[in-house]
Amino acid sequence: MQFSKSTDYALHALLHLGHPDRHHNVGIKELSATLGVSESYLSKIMSKLRQDGIVRAVPGVNGGYELARPAEQITFLDVIQVIEGRQQMFECSNSKSQQHQLLAEEGAAQPDRKRPGQGECLVEQVMEGAQQHLYQYLREHTIQSVLDEAFKRRHQEANKK
Amino acid sequence: MQFSKSTDYALHALLHLGHPDRHHNVGIKELSATLGVSESYLSKIMSKLRQDGIVRAVPGVNGGYELARPAEQITFLDVIQVIEGRQQMFECSNSKSQQHQLLAEEGAAQPDRKRPGQGECLVEQVMEGAQQHLYQYLREHTIQSVLDEAFKRRHQEANKK
DNA sequence: TTATTATGGACATCACATATCTATAATAAA
DNA sequence: TTTATTATAGATATGTGATGTCCATAATAA
Ligand code: SF4
Ligand code: SF4
Image 1 (spheres, each protein chain N blue to C red):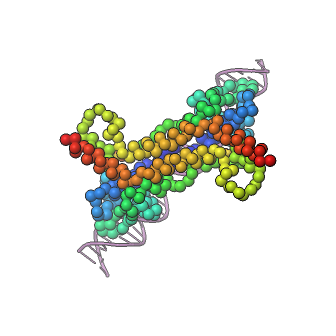
Image 2: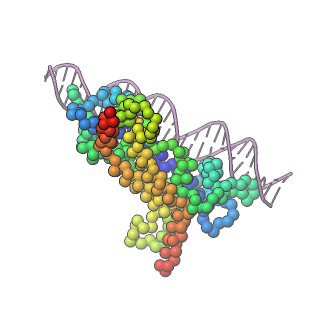
Image 3: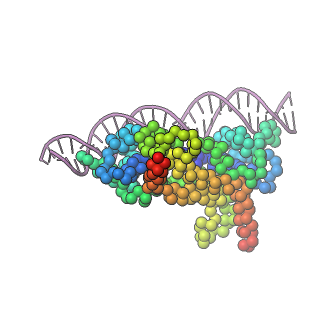
């Protein structure tokens, strides 16, 4: 139940790209140096981000990466799902056991198609709910919101003088 | 970002132990048969649950497992943390990079010990928040709450006749 | 004493994360 | 057009953790 390092790298890379006083493309070399991650590995991550439309990439001289959309439209959830995939946090592995009958189909003797979501498994329901709570929070935090927070801090610090 | 199968098994095992019309200990054989998981593997999981005080175990004839405390005091979070461990969902891997200076220590030039939690990393703050939201939800759902829900369903179904 | 049951350690296997290297394609500048 | 530069994709290596089995040992009740 941990996020991978790749997610860590992706977030930091995007934060770098989102930095306000930056208007030119930034190449893998600069990113690699800034994050302290090998160019090879970071490339793969950036490629994934490009394939999912988070960043744009242009090869050739003075090429590099830039955000494909405003930083306030790139949520933590977006990044995490690109890198970690989109599977459910919980996937039942033994729906053929006796347990299943007891918990999920207790009253599902009626094979009616009326409300397919109603007769759902109770365990999965809890896990689904948990996932939705997590996702909602991650949707509300963006690359921009972190950058704003950093700016606010710098501002506060300047005033303290 | 997925829960392991072991967590799945643990939850189902506990749901079996928590079933109301059951007053004797239940052995690994019965559990294994009910869940459709090998005795060997399930043993390990039950041992973990015992070490963390979720269940009690007694060896010997007619031995087996039983819940160590009421099912309403066993939360989903308890079970998950026993099986998956208690690490943070996000652990920074490059706090020595340039990025770090920018995001976490923007205004941390002052090495005062006043508020150690205040100058925390902004990325970790978001992730921590996400984790707390998830945990809170998982704390609010217990083995008992699922059993209650199952009972309610059975009841509804009986009435529909 | 004996049959039964849980426990712990040693392995085996597999999937995945992490990481590197190389060849290729695309692009801008010359 | 040519060239230097940069991203991309494939192959490969390595380590770690999840999953699973087997066996010897300890504990307990009958
Ligand atoms: S009750 Fe839910 S989690 Fe359990 S076996 Fe059935 S579908 Fe899977
Ligand atoms: S800013 Fe936070 S996440 Fe990033 S390197 Fe510093 S401590 Fe780690």
